[in-house]
Image (cartoon, rainbow, N blue to C red; front, top):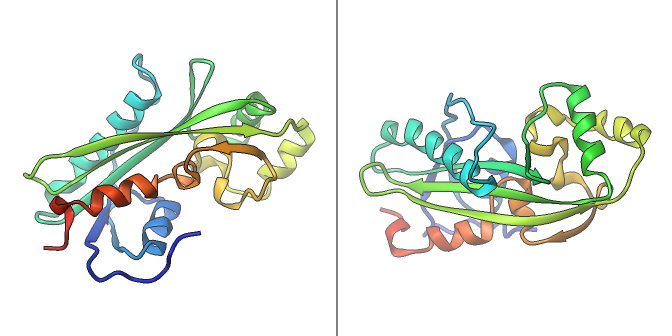
Amino acid sequence: MFDRRVDLTRPRLVLASASPRRRDLLSQAGYDVQIAASDVEEMDSCNEGPEALALINAKRKWTAVAPQYPGEIVVAADTVVWLDGRFYGKPVDFSEATQMLTVLSGRTHQVVTGVALGRAGEGLQEFAEVSLVTFHAFSEKEIVAYLKTIHPLDKAGAYAAQDDNGRLIAKLEGSISNVIGLPMEKLGAFLASENYRRQ
């Protein structure tokens, strides 16, 4: 999916996230990644919509981690699922995960990832990416069987896009890496700018 060759002109990144999916996306794109997960509690609602919520959470994570790594590029992100004016974050248990997928079944939802990046003291850059994901219609029995094959409690919307292979997703409009947790196309463009070259 992504070029695994290491580009030595690319910067070392500090990822303010414990997400193995975000780490893998960056590593597969050739970046030298250090994990520095923040302990910031994520907000789960915002009156201004999904892009605002994702950016608020990303900026909070960046603010908590960046001062600990002066001179380093810190990348923070947050992904939310949005449908019918409601946020679908990480489910608290298997029952809530089942409820989420029941609502998403056969419908199109938004996946929004907010990204905050930069070096402490040099100004924060931010952007949000939106993808549209349409699910197949599936029964409760199929949902339960699916959830037993993944770990839904650490995934917004209770599903794993990176291993889907058409099992749930009938149609995708936009970036698949965004749905996985980090919009690599747009992030790569930011990191290629003059401000983010290797020091």
